[in-house]
View 1: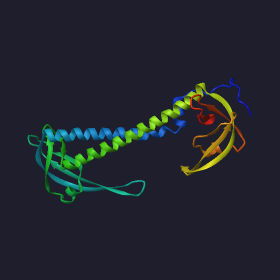
View 2: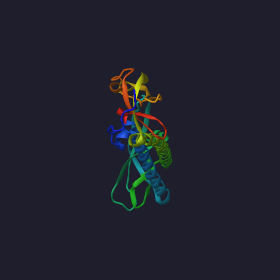
View 3: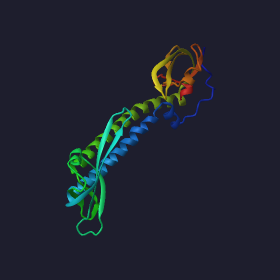
View 4: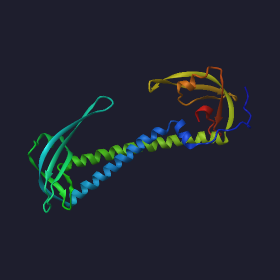
Length: 245
């Protein structure tokens, strides 16, 4: 087994393909969720500050109560408490009706037909609240959740960019070598019910390497002793299986 001729055509470089092949598309999930949570926290904070600064207090009638139950993927249940209330702001002829979440204590202490204090912005009465403390908890929750998710995305991007850089160097400037498969190992990992594998090899110079996590159709298409093609990062010496980048 020797080195493959350098005249062999190289695969073209495609960053979208690299991100997909290297399994970095998942970074979009925490990034998008983190940005969304951060925006929600910021909007909630500006509303809270506006109500604290410019709000006036009136009285509103509770016209409906509702508990919304949700279950996550682990089967754990969360409860969200809602009150729908209606009031006529001072100086307005129209009635404002709002459905909003409140804390459990406020919900349990309230019945339909009760009157509660409502804080609203005098010239924008549709911006109102029954439970400012609950609103502030929402700001804290979404702010912390958004920050954590953004940090996860940033850390993953920094880690992943090193892999992209190595694969890029291998594609553009790396040596193209033959390698002989030495092991095909089944991993304790399943995606959509299908097992995942890792292929190990020894290249033409005697260096050992291993593949990224591989689908069964790709890994099991080979057997120990088969010859595959790899690209070698000229800086770090890492080998990348041609079929995975």
